[in-house]
Image (cartoon, rainbow, N blue to C red):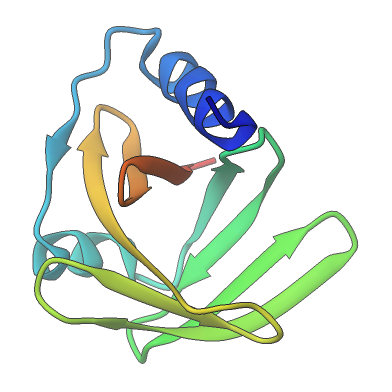
Length: 116
C-alpha cells in the first residue's frame, strides 16, 4: 500500500471526523461556488496547509508558507483542471462536505478546501 494512499485516507478521516457528509458536485456547480475570488484554506493530501484562491476569470493563486504560485483552472463538465507554474496539470473532481470541498484525483484525495 503506498504512502500517498495512506496519507489520503488519513486526511479523509480527519476531514470527515466531525460527521461531515460528502456528496459529489458537478464542476459547473462547484466552480461557481469555489471561484469567487475569496481565499480558501487548503490542506494537501500530505497534511501541509496553505491558502488557495480561485478567481472567476480562470486564474488561481496558491500560497503555502513563503511560497506563492500562480496558475489557472478550467472546467470541462465534471472535472476541474489546475495548471500551476512548474507543476504537472492536475484534474480533480470536487466533492462537497459540510464545510467545504474535497478534491479527488482518481481514487486519491488531492486536497481539501474550506473557508478560513
